[in-house]
Image 1: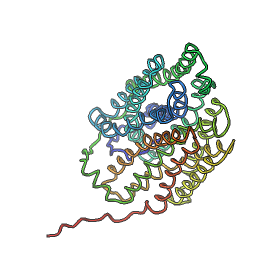
Image 2: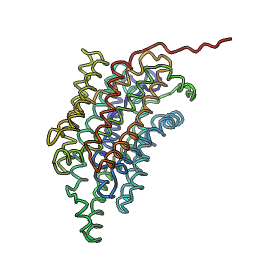
Image 3: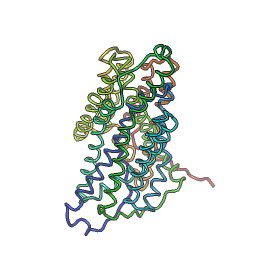
Image 4: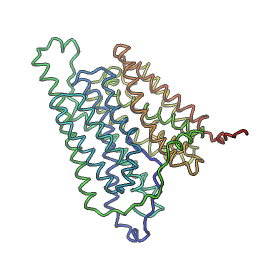
Length: 439
């Protein structure tokens, strides 16, 4: 997934940019950071159904993969800022890359022992690492060139991130999913030895992709170490906790945080159960479902990001958000009550209409905040924890209804209703209530 938060104010000496080509290679490296964390996030849609099978998990247990990643964001949001402030952006990025690489390498012992808790620890460590990367990448991309091109560079980074939505599921379907899935009755009829071989084989298939991801993180860390990047100075003071609480007096910000919480939850719900939904509701096999996650959902998500950005030039952002969130809600209903291929196409089309939600909610939430813009941005980033909460709720509902995946999609449907309310009423800026002390 891509996060465009309000970056810290940065000051860079003018003489650092006398040669426009000087920072071409460093910018390419920064852009690759967007791709790396996009790969991690968008492999989760493959990893969840796969580890559910390999580790014999319930639906709720399988969503702990999302919990591990997105709860890391919540816990590391403030520490990441402190790390970057004390160590500097370049050293902070290198530390984040190494941390994420270590987490990815932990997939090897986790797969060898088929220990789900170790998988979760690995994902949590990866999540902590990429939180640092995401916190640093936006300001770095902003300063690697002239000031006028900052917005273009950030959009390029987001586009590179969007490519991972398409590529990651295809890689996961090719190298992780086996296409072999035995029913509970078939597993019960297996001998203990045959069952162990089957489960160990399934578990082992995750090692190769995550070894490559780990090597990618560490290789980029080495490149960052040797390439010159501009010194980025952060002059911001650290906000006090009371200032974060005070910011909620802006009603439109409060609703934006709630809407962002719901949006991230909805997106993660849709992708986390896409493969199993395509199998059970769409009637396709496991590998085909994995490919559809990339070729239908991923392609439409990427297309929506470009087309949606173009439409914002002609349609007010809150109105476009209303149109897209209503369409996403209708498609969710179609997925819940439909059958066959219509279910798969409905899930895929949701990717198109969800594509502009995060940045649009973000921008509407930060409107007219003035000096509290950075605090508002931090709160909107922390709302990403919705990706840890809603999928678990969805998993519990599916388990309660005897593995009925379609019933579970009522959770993202409710999330879309929250976004619809925000786009119609919640986004409106109101003067915050001023508390007057009476003598």
